Length: 205
Image: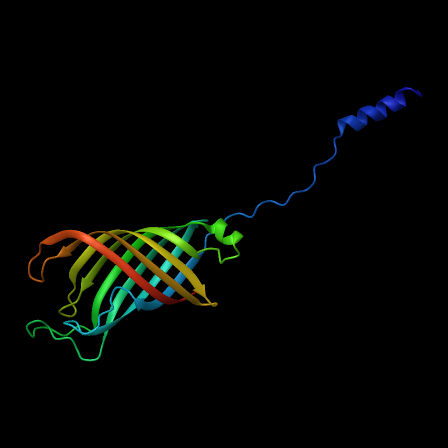
């Protein structure tokens, strides 16, 4: 009896290993959405000329589908200010909206870890990015009829940063290929290089 007890205690001790230290699970990815409404130096801006002076208004949404990736869409418009734009031959009503456009694209934000290590701003929708964007735009020469102006596919490089609690700066440059209508009466199109440059200031939610 005296020998069995120490052996039993030893067997019980080796059969029950110590419990591992508790670890905190890594937080899971939770996609977020950013709504934008802004203006700037972008599609829809004209100063003088045939269409007169127009200021752009851009409404957009950006959805973070992965930690470094997002999908986005924009609806852009140019709103004429000052004198009304005359129709080419006096027909129809002059257009208050001088341009309507749609963008669809995908972005990849890069160097997030380097920015974090340097103490710079990081997070969803913030930092330098590369993007692929499809664009199409229309010009309402005779309201309310729309004339297709251009469709393009571009590669972009840009940078996007928050300005306070509800501001956003987005600047980008890039190029690609476009198909552009040759003139208002001829339905043919021309394939040529496309340049995409812009600086937008937006309110976001």
